[in-house]
Length: 298
Image 1 (cartoon, helix red, strand yellow):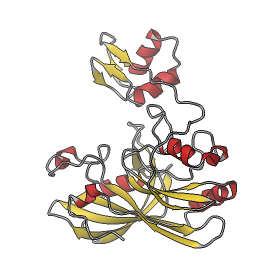
Image 2: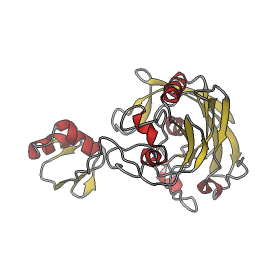
Image 3: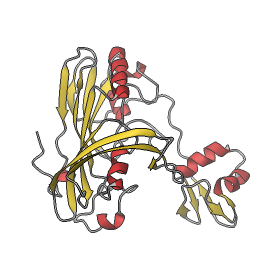
Image 4: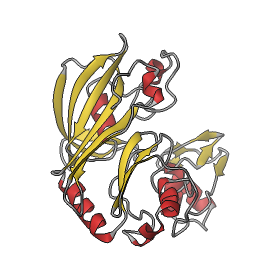
């Protein structure tokens, strides 16, 4: 038996090993018709291998006329209520239709801010997470927002999550280290050492049913997949979360959730230029309301 990436490298010498590894982990390789996303997966070499080469991501994203749900805007910043399903910035498999593409059409000046692939972006939301995200429109705003988000001291981000089951306590604080999962590189995992500190303050808002609980999470850090990993560690994974959740529990819901039920609900911070305190709230999306999470609109 051999590693999948080694077999493919032998058969496709025009591709580098890192390129093959990236294609595998991004889900572009099938073995006997089944997608395999682990470069180290063992294969005999007799299988049928299929590689799909995605179109290249443009070095510089282009503007696209995509409607934005703008919560607030001035000369320096724009706050958007991002819908679930929208990717924040271009990446392999998502070269167009992203929030950045929409922003470049709405505010072309952001093209000069930050790196070319993520102009104006100082924090991100997962593709399937809805809610508030703030974008810089000027260089001073970009620099000051980046400092604020890096320090975790002057920004308060509050999320709503619909979770399976109910936590044993009504509230708590999770402080762990998060790092890449040792086996599945797309995932994050709680580790004893070598990770980055992740802090989530959570409280039960209300029981939605015997099977579901509405939980509020205030994060002190912004690690990748932080809330999703932390809630799963409590035995209360977020409903609809295909990576850290429980598919068998999702199938028991009517209707089964179409996406992970995590929503960036509130954002509080100081204006990056005027230093005036700002507070924004994104309405609870319809996906939440169909499970009884109502009464949180402001």
